[in-house]
Length: 305
Ligand code: RRO
Image (cartoon, rainbow, N blue to C red; front, side, top):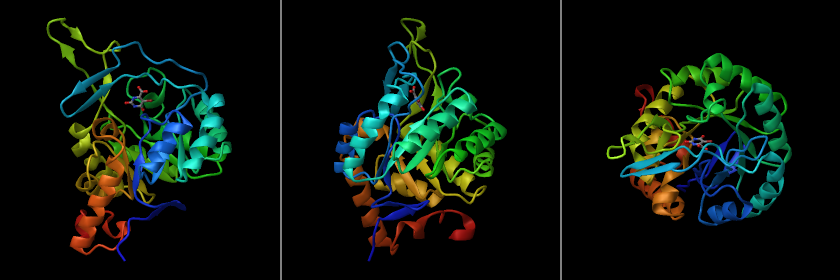
């Protein structure tokens, strides 16, 4: 029978749609709502060592095909997060804990602490494009990605995912670094560095000036990144960037993703986007003779046609 269930690194998902880090995932209660809406799994807000209020406003610019954000890693701090994870688990879907840090020691410590909270996997955010000293700096060379993953892997008892930046000339090389360092999966992509300027004011709109672009505008970039990563590593890939429909998700899966994350479309379409995406994927599978999601993974590559 045609079905949407997938297993990633031993984690069972009833469907391949996962809530991406950064939206409706700061409290246990909001994560339960996302689970109820049909997400197959949930990634938490990226949390760090200390509470942070983030960058000054304006920190979001609405564009017609996406969002530009410079939130600046607002989060309550890891110590506060144990209770939120405990609550989120009541939603009945796997919870993936996202952490960011300024040094390899810090991020490894946070990953270990997150793993002790009972999450099903840990996602290392190595890719925030606009918070100086955090994220992207640690994730900008294959060597750094490898060291951070190796260090983090030691203290983590659950699968470890590395979320990579597209703001590089060779994301596949970063993925190879993650695989060498022992990561169990790759998450691609985080937002694409961008800027919007208000002509009358003659200045950038974001208080931080530079931000990260998400939404439909970046989908072709994400699909290309997943396609390149699929040819470079053996570990599973989770695709993210501009997915709003089942057909968008299928692009990522056929490029090589085993599952997908949805973020900005939750803001633009509402929580229904998870069940809508699943339904559309299932319809496509029935109509095109695919029994399961793994049957479609990477089929856009010439040797897998
Ligand atoms: O908080 C943010 O500004 C942010 C993060 Br942590 C990230 O990973 N990606 C992004 O676009 N914004």
